[in-house]
Length: 479
Image (cartoon, rainbow, N blue to C red):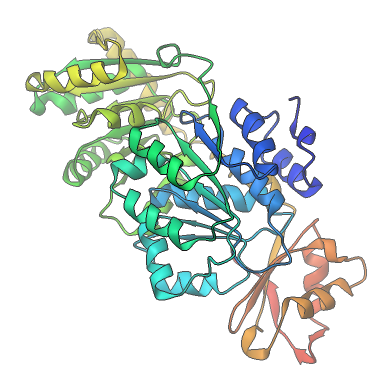
């Protein structure tokens, strides 16, 4: 299909896709979107980087009924980072249609999630544990869910979430549509599909390029005490643009991060012991290119979509063979190429053998770079990092630049409703209801998206207006 117009979806969604840089549908999008629009249950086997999030996000944004304020779609996903990423993608794709999406996951204040769920919410993205918490406490209404997405089903199984997923499914309406996405299709996942899906269509997306064409992977045998020295040599000789360095424990992550920082390497770190907001901030900085090296445990190995990661280095070889595939899948995404380099101590040969058996091919042993290549690379590397990097624009930059988020000091406690805000703003000369985006009414304040570059006009006019006869204070909200 040449572009997204062929799906016959809302112009507001087409406009968002254009501004987000979506040009032509990927194979998974081309096959999935029409079936979801026809309310077909689907099972999709697709590798990471194939564009599957947009494959379910686009038709969900198309099909939700905006005028209804209750959740109509539930997306279950195994990790917090992926949960936040999917929320961001759905919010961006549905921005002009005014689709509201909430994310619920652990290590975030429960009460703040409850407040968000009390607002107008059309789509909920959640990790299984926190979603179940909300169900048991009665803080989420899933009684009218029409669309269920089980994303990264194989990882749900590996992380022990599958029973919680079943419990959640049993709480949902029977006549919903179900979509399941997985990189692999085990017997347990097949049993789940057989039990909970109705005559599902099966879609198997094969990568256009074999992983060996897209990712050059090799390993070095190295004693533990010599790993840091080898890492420096690899970095200087490879000179990566963007690189994730995987470690097996939080302690190793923190130690390696400190050592690299001390040597002047631009880096960040992420592991499961960090506060959730700190983790999100680090990932956002890495996406935008504020630093070159992300030192991480395997929480960064699954489902995180970051453009143009050129290298993945396993500082510690993974003990679980599945983790190897997820790690190297952070590079060589879409049609890009990448390199994956693993460090193994001599007594870890059996882990390498298990990985090779799992992936069905031999991983070559690397040849150590020569001293002259290391010295030349070192000079180039430090010349490059002397210059501050030009930060990449956020995915939503083209959408955000025409939108002004404004704040007013009135909310539910003053009995303010969506209708009151829309009525007041659409009566301003030069402003129409179509210029008003998502409205978030909280207890004592409200946030309103003003579209089409009309934010200044609305802000100036509201200084002289009242809402429901009440004088209000308004200003541009801090993002």
